[in-house]
Length: 243
Length: 342
Image (cartoon, rainbow over all chains, first blue to last red; front, side, top):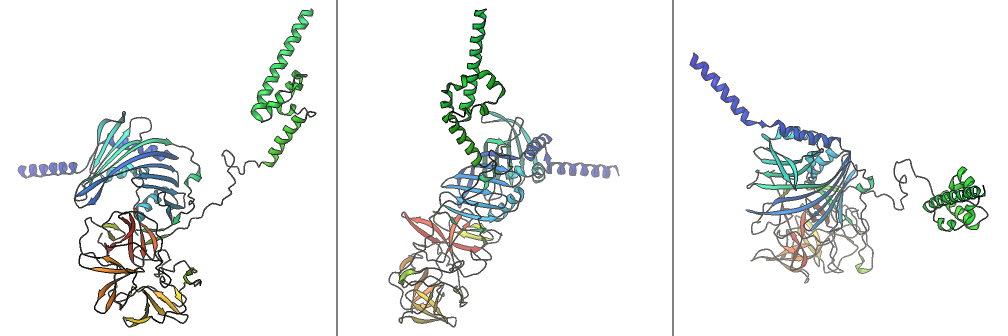
């Protein structure tokens, strides 16, 4: 009887250990992410520059690195202007609260689509229908830290790091399909300085890195900068939706 | 005593000149004519008392002086003619008055599954949205329309395919968009879509011709008769002859001599003219689907540029053409678009 009892206790203990290993969440990491998310939630507008590099499949067993730089201006509750300077492209996405317009400076063509009336829904819709991922889109969600914790199996604060000579909190999260690392500024604003996402869901792991700079908070952006007027000779083309 | 009076007088002059210089400073900041006003000696007269109890701008007029009155009238008229803030907006000027009207951009979105590019669900590319195409080859304006309810697409013929798969595999996995995988060989290189006209006897889909050449022959596909002449297929209607998509499977004896050879594989060549691909057969030349992976240098009217993900294609009928460059020349590669499991 005693033996059986010990066995049950041991089984319970090990099952607890196994369960504990499934989800590891570091409270310091969550505190940092919560703070960053709260500050985003209180902003009326935000502007920043992001420099991205990502691995793209060029051919079978053949990845190439693609670079781009993006200037972003977002004004709550329903406006943004995103200008992307990439290899062989110069694109602009404008959202005025009613429609999103894509414009290619290089090719002088544009597309227009009626959009939802708020940023969060528009960001979701752009991703779902047109495959467009807005930089920092994740950070803009009110439930960012909550989502991060629920999506990651392991969340940890990895200590202080230095990004461009400035101290930063290094936070990382991981699950079976990706590892996300975020470096958050160690100042009053807790803004993201860098993110690196490593995906494991394809045949090979591939990375997506973003460096943030030139943060401008609560600037009074005039509404007109979010409006698009087609330049002379620009041609509207059809925008193919995925849905 | 005299010395004291003299000192007070000198002090008075000093204060007056001090006041004058303040007034000048204001004048120079507030209006353009300040410089001239500064030269006027009038302000030195009884300066202290006048300056003390009147604001500078109103005390300045010195109405007898032409320069002053000119200045004032200019500034006041400016003030009258200039509108105040156009609204109560808390901006610099209440918002500007635009000369151009604000743009109303119209949404133009389609999806691959419904195949309704650009013309609101009608599957007849070539006259969607246009009613009045001026085809001025013979100095005759002819309306391209669909009033005879002719289906200018022939995608319902038996064994119709929007493209013919390539003979070799694609080196990359397809780019998946909306449940369809897009595959191509060459690097994407955007160039604007400029429809090509193959000469005075060639016409795009939907074109209505009152008559056709007597050399036209009748071709039958799936029990439907077409009139064929110089690379163009027509369907007879009450009003004349409407140009339609070349029906796949139709065989004609002769194709225009301007047809270009297109390499489909090392052993097979097609002939391309007016947006139609032909393959040599026993009876002559048979209309075949566009060969995916092959390139052509010209596309007919009736296509529509569509943005799929990061790339812009020209869609003609159900076929996607990707802009590419070969040997420095703008070309279009026929894209394979097949349904994929997501």
